[in-house]
Image 1 (cartoon, rainbow over the protein chains, first blue to last red):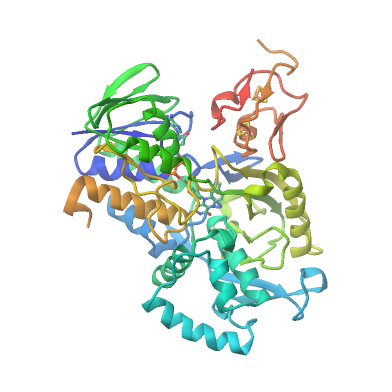
Image 2 (cartoon, rainbow over the protein chains, first blue to last red):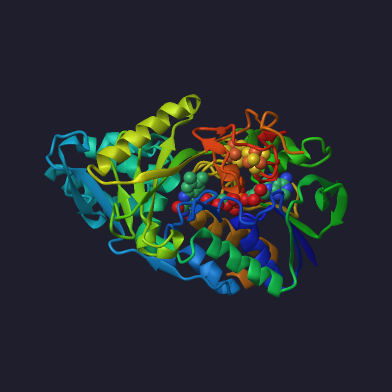
Length: 430
Length: 58
Ligand SMILES: Cc1cc2nc3c(=O)[nH]c(=O)nc-3n(C[C@H](O)[C@H](O)[C@H](O)COP(=O)(O)OP(=O)(O)OC[C@H]3O[C@@H](n4cnc5c(N)ncnc54)[C@H](O)[C@@H]3O)c2cc1C
Ligand code: SF4
Ligand code: SF4
């Protein structure tokens, strides 16, 4: 059996590793000269920056991605920071920014700033929503109806902005609760030693060890189909046949390759559904400093900043991600679709935030990276993901355009890959 | 051909991800919301294939 994978992002590599291990002949075609998509390192001024991710795995060593990596035999060490997550609040209740000072609160104590009434309600909702999860509205709308308080919106925007690059108003309540549930089930984030590249490199090793090939600088430009099946792809002008094709380039791009095809059941409905998907956007500011700005390897959520949702300092876990004696700190801010035309202003606001969050600290901005549209934070915003199937029975889609329910970022990719491979390999994947 | 960096252009596909900047050996690309090719550019074209959205044109 032969499998072709379009794209060497995390989803493509996970699928290729699993299939090559299961005995498939696997070929991965990647358009860029580098492997790993938005989950690998780029070197800049001696620092290990990344093509996308903030070198963080949302559920650390105990999440769906870690489990899948272990299953395929990819050798990656993922370290969970301690404290895992800290929330920076204002020094005094009633302040609306960090100008007059701040206090740091452990994530476990996120309830402290709630009113007493809302704290009691929260205990009740923690149980009732589990039994009977709310549906049909945004998380923000649900909060308005149940926990209406300034803090509710701040902490939810910071948390979802950091974790899925969306505002609370843009996360469907079902997805929000699934994410929260997963946080309790799998635990908080961790950093792979070596950064994103350690993960994608380890997968490449597994694929090659099982005879798989990865072709870089090889763009797939078309799909070959017969009836309701894909029979191969076209790359660099050559045709390559396969029994199954897995696309790691998202539903819209995959659908575009099918748009001229006729006689496929359900294709029209698929093309329509796909056209509604909206990628999430964000800005990452990479900072260097001599002294640590945060001082631990966990996440710092910043609910009182204007734009920045959270920050991490990965060199507290892996010092090798920067030159000796230097630290690498990265902030993330979600960019709302309506602000995409004003990116420069959003960047300025982010830079002002960092100044306020780290008053009197010395640092230097290394690079400001923004992501949207064709190279976004997520190809499909969380909660709107389609399944990994397409109208062609042997054509699948993996990656952050087909995340599993409640799966933050790469955890969602791992859940989606597991489901797709279960479709292909059956029981072996359970 | 090496010249004075007048021919490299950034088209509207650019999202500002900075990937190209990391592969330019003379540090000729500034990033702020999108890529800006500075006068240091030698038109070597090495950055072009690294752009994930085909935003660099010679
Ligand atoms: C700023 C930012 C911060 C983030 N932070 C985190 C984080 O801390 N933790 C986390 O878990 N996630 C994070 N993410 C998300 C994470 O980086 C992505 O979800 C993940 O890397 C996407 O993987 P993917 O499988 O969808 O593939 P992609 O990375 O999209 O890879 C797809 C590959 O396909 C290739 N390709 C495209 N078209 C073709 C074609 N026609 N032929 C051949 N190849 C093609 C592309 O070049 C690319 O290499 C972040 C993302 C961003 C942008
Ligand atoms: S053409 Fe060469 S010098 Fe100019 S920006 Fe690209 S890599 Fe740098
Ligand atoms: S790699 Fe492409 S999208 Fe990214 S900043 Fe450079 S030109 Fe823009």
